[in-house]
Amino acid sequence: MPEKPRLLITRRLRDAVQARAARDYQVLINAEDRVFTRDELIEKCQQVDAVLPCHSEHFSADVIAALPDRLKIIANHSVGVDHVDLAAAKSAGIVVTNTPDVLSDATAEIAMLCMLGAARRGAEGDAMVRAGKWDFWSPAFMVGRQVTGKRFGVLGMGRVGQVAAERARGFGMTVHYHNRKPVADHLAKGAIFHDTIEGLFANSDVLSLHCPSTPETIGIINAKTIGLLPDRAILVNTARGNLVDEDALVDALESGKLFAAGLDVFRNEPGGNQRISALRNVFMLPHIGSATEETRDAMGYRALDNLDAYFSGREPGDRVA
Ligand code: 8YV
Image (cartoon, rainbow, N blue to C red; front, side, top):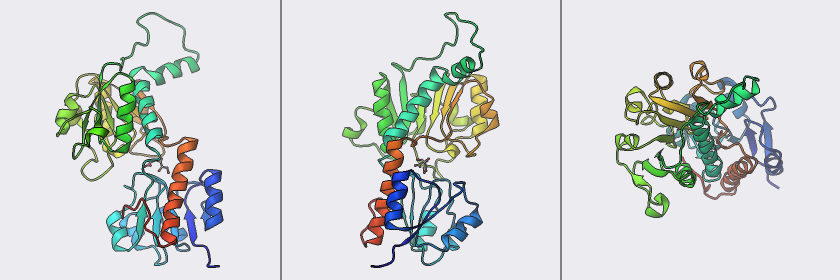
């Protein structure tokens, strides 16, 4: 029997996924389950034929240049691949895959949680009750904004954006979107396409970010573009922290230009942003968009399916480079 390929798994996965990986590969696992430093990542990769990383491991061009010839595939445990320099991987002949589709429902759920948490002042209310400071009630107490009947703006009408739009319709919202190209009617389901972000932003009472992080989208939410939103709009970000200029976001939340924000992602992860954390009108989560039992299993299996395909001489289904 040929030797099983050697696989580095950079972060601990759920048990069933680990078990399947151990059955089919010689697994090298990051026992400490913390983000490797750049040098550790390079060093661990020297001994393997494949790596299964999360979005927390950065395969920049210089890391890719330091990978051994034997390493043939980076099978990501994420849909986003902004942590991998795809052009560098391609020119090094390294296959890169991701895990689309399987996390769309879970991430759209978190977008709804962020939207409602922001609109209905979820973080503030939770903190108050928890701290034993709920000593008052009146009809004017903790009044938020209702989302029913409002406009849900989707920036990036890909797989996650489409499911989020579907969920928002369930709250009686009308959906507007901007995408590089309009999506097919059966996917748009009546959502109104805007060919500019100006058009979308002007029509978004809630703006939800679902686009990848690319040189074109980094910082797309900034003082100027926030200014395009209706007054007292709500920003939801479950995509990537670097889509947002966080100082501009803080200014808009402080001035009341934005009513609130619901954020699952930050520029600095793990950790977040102290200025944002100090604000009352932000509902925050620690990047858990895909963190359900079902989805994390499915993501792990999908990454392993891509590895299995590669090592049995087939084209991996989710190849991105
Ligand atoms: C994960 C994500 O948090 O898929 C992505 O792009 O950001 C998330 O699903 C993560 O990469 C899990 O490994």
